[in-house]
Length: 175
Image (tube, rainbow, N blue to C red; front, side, top):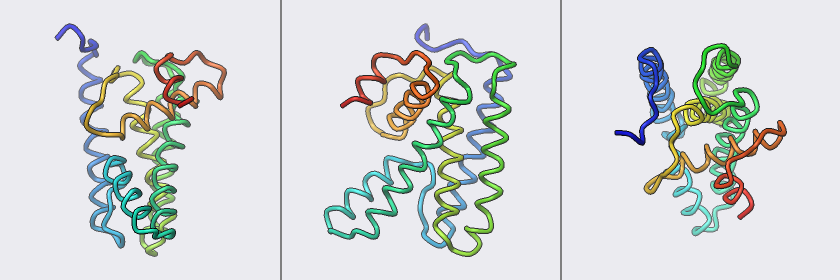
C-alpha cells in the first residue's frame, strides 16, 4: 500500500506493545467502578451527547472532563514529541515516562472509586495516542472521533510550542 508510511520493524513491535497497554487500561476502565472506556472517545462522545440530551449535568460534566483529559494528553504529546516522523532520539522516552507516571498515579484513585483516576488514565491514553498518531500518519477517519480529538490536541500542542501545524488541523481547531 503506497499510502502507508514505511515504519521500521521495531516500530511495529512497539506499536503492538502500546496497543496491548491501551487495551489493558481500557479493561481496567470497563471492569472498574464506572464500567467505562478510558480511551474510546467515540463512545465517550456519544455518552456525552446522551447526557446532554437527558439534561443530566453531572454526567455531561463527567464525559466532558473525560474527553478533555484525553485531548490534554494529546496536547502534551504534541508539545513533547514535536515531530511527525518516527526517529529515535526524539522525545518519545519523555512521553512514555509521563504516560507511565500518570497511570501509576491513577491507581490509588481508581482503587478508591474516584473519577480522578479515570481522568489521569485518559490523559495517559491521549498522550500515547497522540504520540503514535503523530508518527504513523493517520490522516483520514470516518467512523470514530478518537483520532479527530488526537489530531486536535496534537495541533494545539504544536501551536503552544510555536511549531508549524498542518492546515487541516488548523481548520478543525478553528471551526
